[in-house]
Length: 308
Image (tube, rainbow, N blue to C red; front, top):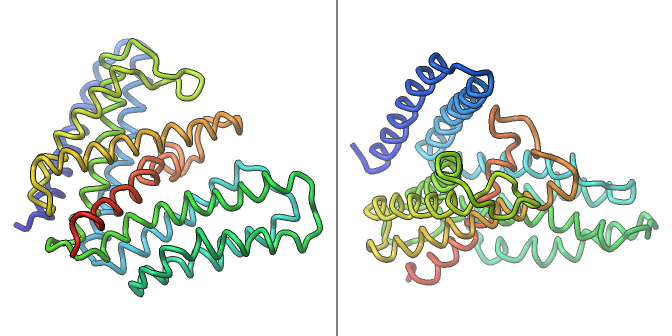
């Protein structure tokens, strides 16, 4: 079996164990509160089954399918962002261009492997063109913050997230699909481990105003566990064990701040979740927030240090 096959098989084995344990815990729950907590965990596990199969299937199919999957995730995440973020009629042209021009062109550049234009298309050209288009509506009310929301939504959900499949462009001497798998597995394991360690050992709230559920104990335990997983997966990558520890630490720290920053945005908008697409998890943006911040950091560290 290939390295990719072993990782996918390991993930499915973990999900199988989690499903069996969750069913048993739900059967033994004695209080309504305990039953609700276990039911939520089981809902999350069922969603992880679907996400693991979709993501693993896309990677197995090749780079084109993987890039198209992330393009779809970007579209859904951008939609969730604008479902909560306030807008005015004067923003509609810029929003149309964000969804139906900037996003497809950006991912087409990725499919084409045109790194030079991929790197600057959104942060330079879209950054300049979108506010210019918005001025044509003649609506200057709250123009600066409205323009910032248009630009920031596109940067977060399209530009930054697209750096995960952009890893497929890198020539590191190892299978680039393994780099995508490494990034996503470490980032998502960190999220799950922080949640589990926080539930089991959490006592000290990290920042209740931003994210009431995050604890210092959860962060320490989750980060340590995710880094250990990153080191164990080093043979899939061009990294030595020590390098894998450093790279996985960069992923989990950046990923934490991705979730933390987007939690602050949600609180500002008066929402608990970005959406309800994924049972037990909220929306797509709730699930990929850590990858959004971790992907460009991991991409550029890998590109700078591990490519010719």
